[in-house]
Length: 246
Image (cartoon, rainbow, N blue to C red; front, side, top):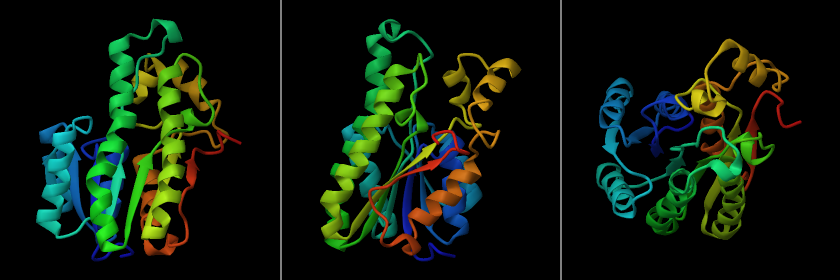
């Protein structure tokens, strides 16, 4: 119960890695807000773990403000914020990615972190404590061809994490990131372009441990970084990738 008496918001928690993180947090004693743009998905997971569901568009400032306010009203505090919601564009030559897809990737993967920080950091500063965990990707460390702008967005997340960490450390707020390799999530098919045995084998061949990241892997790593056990850890981008970035 390493997160007993803690409160947490997990965005994109209606599926994939976010669900794994929300489940682990609840199992470790946290009160969890399951935030997702998919209302039904959020409600389903919240009911399963005994959490609170909230519908949010992480790329919209007013929607993010409402999410933080709702968590504050329900929990009385916000101890942990996990910026997990993310999107990608389909594999394509960099010059063929549409402006619409580019804007969507950077709005959800990057701007959302700014919006969430703008709304939550003042509360954490007042509390004198807090943890922000950004879900990045090995794509930001070891880019794959034809996912250029997704790669770039996750590189932004890595740098933003370190910049946030160094600024907020004196205020008692820790900021870290997780860098998973491709996983069994709704985004997997989009990363690969097509979900076929051949394409899976190609992706897996680049992972020394021979398997994808799972929601459980992410939940375990997130629970540690967001717990008091990691009290001196800030500004790291932890690779949960089976050795891909070695």
